[in-house]
Length: 109
Length: 114
Image (cartoon, rainbow over all chains, first blue to last red; front, side):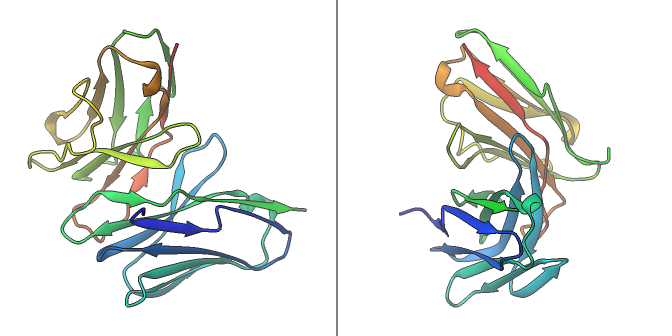
């Protein structure tokens, strides 16, 4: 079992739909990151969370430390949101990131 | 610089040759990470540098892989006697000190071993 599990692995939705991507982890963490990777592109950090909720534009990230679970939400989804979304965690005392396998999101116009 | 810079962006090499990949982190960032992403796979940790501390090399897949960071800034990842399974995108990231700081990624170097 991977330390970081994401679901779904693939998600296709119509433009405008509300999107939720989930991340569960099995270790104690100091921080959780949500990253975005466009095809052929580099990786962009969307959020870093250690508790609660963060919002940036149409993106919202939440984390529940007790349940070891985080969600990334996209409101009013748009084709330009199509990308791979990756959850990554830092476990206590270890600064390296452990990554989930990613969720490939495709938004259809 | 404004962001993490990696070079080259693409590298094609013959099996058995050595390659060097370069990472120039954000100025002032003390932490530097190398990761790789093989085709269709997730991201895999390779090595981590923090200031003057001994690097965490626990992710290096074999002794053909090595990395150094000179002067606490630029880092070079060296792969000796490349194999086809080394083909991947090699990503570098940097952050300021501390486990609760954001990591910034470079665009990666796509290595193809033929």
